[in-house]
Image (tube, rainbow, N blue to C red):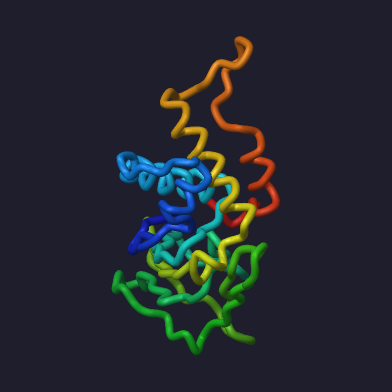
Length: 197
């Protein structure tokens, strides 16, 4: 499986104002820095949880169709834009959505989505080549308000940690500390296992 971002999130789960309130920063001098730390914190938390937070579009590439279920990564998946594949003649073909069923779990702790052929149906035959199957998905919670507060709290802790410590690691009693333990404790309940690259 290979992933490629088509449309990145157009906004973040946290605003600069929310982050500054947590940081207790009143001036505007560091707004650009804080904004970049928010993006970095979201990316870190998404990678840790294998989950997408804000609406975004991805292409997912597979070498071939599976025997039974095609699992989709980075939940929550809100929609499947298209399923394309290279047929045995090498033509890129769109698989008609009438020929497959989708399961798109919703909610705060939603798991991976999946595609299966309809009853008595089957996955199409593909050409033997790399990235023979291409699925375009839209994923992420509906908006910033829908992103769980625990995830936002973890992001605030990371932004604060990085804002106050401009080095890669912090030494605490001769022990290097790179990420506050509270961040992982907040994120673990949202971690997705399986169906990820």
